[in-house]
Length: 584
Image (tube, rainbow, N blue to C red; front, side, top):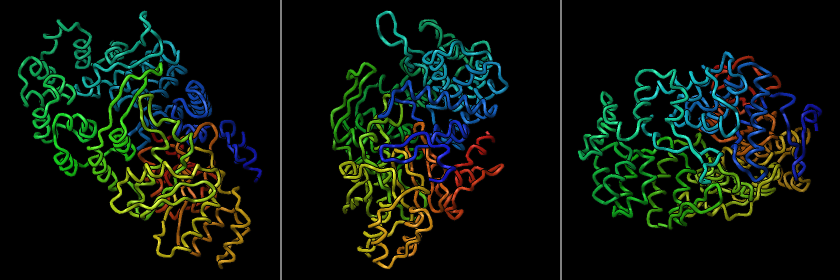
């Protein structure tokens, strides 16, 4: 192992792969590359408390190393357009930093930048202060909260007004306590603008006293008229009621759903997906739902979100509360499964970079023990792995799981993405920290099957620490096999690089993406091997990073980071992503 790598090795995995603890040698890279993938939930490897403590330590270490960097990282993580769009970290990070630096020069401005995207972020920000024992929200952060609320329209604020945000403490009756958005508005009350203060006063008032307070607020007036007996489409639209509000008042009947579907734009795409079961049970035929789904775009959805809906339709769903008691259950409804397949086909359009890709999924136990979102989430990182691999098979014709070998799963005629993803879950590939042998095994399979389509990019999806490309090893038998089949092998370069060079000679161009979907403390270093990209975490920009890197020729990461980079350059070289973060 090269000395530069040995200097940062903190531990070894069960397979002997070097696990790199960058927190001492490079706290900025440790935060952006390792903790950028932190899920902050109970995981296969440790408790949620340990995850949060480790995350807070990394965040504060980066802020000590470079004042303001932690705040900019928080804004970058939350930004849904230029950044990662991570809602979990986007409210946790500013809470930790505001408590640590209550009167700092970044506190007000970056609290605002982190919380301005969604109203529930403001409420979650407040819950973190209580759940993490951070004390009172400092005045500067309250000003930032008020600025964020001022930038939201009435619909955004009213949408979350009734939602309860749980906190750790218990009430006298033993039930989990909770906070509401109006509680967060109250914390920032002294700094609210006139319009937001009026909304706060309405939400904070007893129900019987709210009538006069709605005057002058068109949204509220229309809603009160709708629920007061004037249940017209005009009031529904003016009040921008949610489908849930309409159903609670008019009932989930076939007539109600037909009225809702008849008004263009009244039922957003995400809500359409969420209410498929309710519409079907109310009497809307499957062929009507299929036709409606084909007319929609479903922009902003990710394949795994649709896959989890399909899974619930096929096998039902049970959710547990914090006491591990069943609190929600829905029976299977396989008749609507084809609608989810149609939605997924729409979602898949334009998701992937150009060129044929082969997804290779790690399906080990830990992949299905680590949730992708909050405690109510059904999706695990394993679901992302198998469904992305299945999506790639739409063009390539097959997907795979991996260990030291590759286990190919053909896409059958007429087989949907969800069905193939489920088939992959039943495969043999329980992952691995080395992939060089997998690459060579795939070379041998493709040479033996000349008619099989060749992938341009190999995506290895896992939650484990990969061996760095520089220090992977190859079985001597695999090297001998290559040479016996007249495929040149260069023993003077790192094994994974040599394996890819052999691929290039025998099969044409190829790149490898080693994608750690759930990094913890240990993290791979940026790849110093050409045609190999290391990715960590999962976000809306991940495939854009791959596209930008490939457009630049799939280069190795440079030894020294550039002094400044653009957003596209950050994608080409994840090792200098923190330079882009400084622009936030």
